Image (cartoon, rainbow, N blue to C red; front, side, top):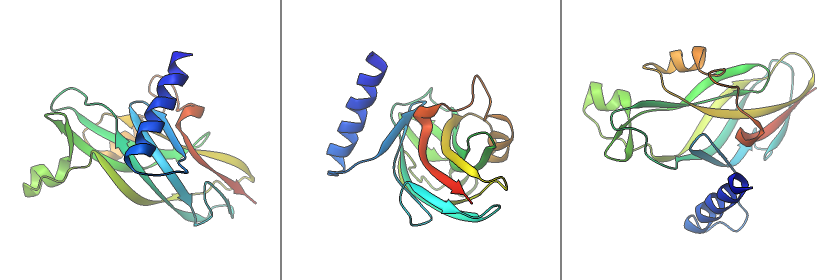
Length: 167
């Protein structure tokens, strides 16, 4: 019961802070994702088998991890696996900064909350699939995609930001 109450409170606070009256948000693994728009069709989109389609959403890390932790947010399709990394950061004094731009260009790009656009590839088998996300902690985004989808458990229903219907 308290897990659901906490999620409701977090989503309410997020919507209040962003002044949204209609807010669709998922809270999972210490991260929120809100207002997903899949292929400009809202939270559910129809796609062709194997189609590459776009997704727009916003995310936010809800609480700081251990200082100097390297963290990612990976997104994929339930039953298929991770396909992309939408955030790659390092925790410094309770904020999340883009890991590579900080180390290689000395640029402090805060990625604690961000609007993102990315692409996913639909499965070839017709059906309805959930788009989900999870936290990862790998040095490289590619390692997060390759290794972290099934760590502990695959993302649950709470991590669903939308659906695709492959037909």
